Length: 329
Image 1 (cartoon, one colour):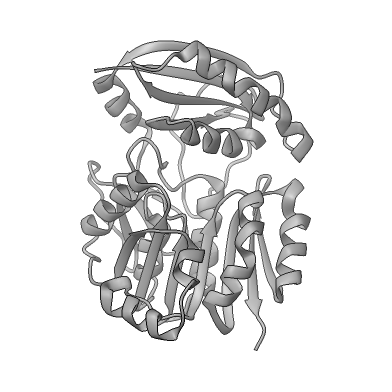
Image 2: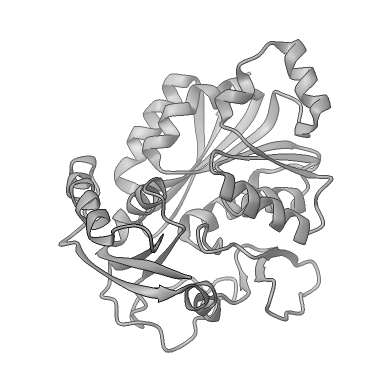
């Protein structure tokens, strides 16, 4: 089967918003490649290593590739995408002088070529993400997340996901019940379980994400600890306590309210359901919010405060922020 590969050359800070838009337009997969400049500062505190050659993408720039079925019209897709990208600057995101191109590619080339660049990587003090097809011998005390993310959900090594994983490691307590909102490949839900959560509910509105996360949960042998469902957070909160009990019996795993909620989503989306997160948490519960570009940090902090949260921790990497907020008693 042939696919249309649409490529957008833009700035790194605009990649998450553009990728989200491409999914909404029906992309069957999206990849993001950021600068591989050898002079770029890199975090090697946990022994991370970077293979050469990297790439010749200028510092701060990025290349996004989206894959659409060959029944689509790539020129029309690009025409549809251009106004959205031009408007990003009004939201504080600089897309730069965005450039577009497209070509036809074979499905096998698309599905397998990217795997060359996905290697085991130590993300936190104890968590390592390992692609299922790569051999790896873990060190003592090292927790391995087996991952076959598929094309649409990334490898879990982007700054926003890495920030979430590090913050989870600092925040989660043994026995916690956790909800992962917008789970994608399921990497955060799997990590929460491996870090000691008793039960984790992973939810996503995208049925393809649900399928991907379900498979990755199986690969890690966590079917009893992690439940994956197609839903949004509000859908879980729309009923009374009796119906909540019925949902528990139906196999959602967790009992509302929970101890911790984690979400790695664009800031503009995070602020839309901050009140729902507050309702989903126990008094004193924690909310880890990532996916926040630095220009949007105050927007999220303000929304958290208005909902009744106290922001107690801030972690940052490059231009990305992860906030930990606590619900009042």
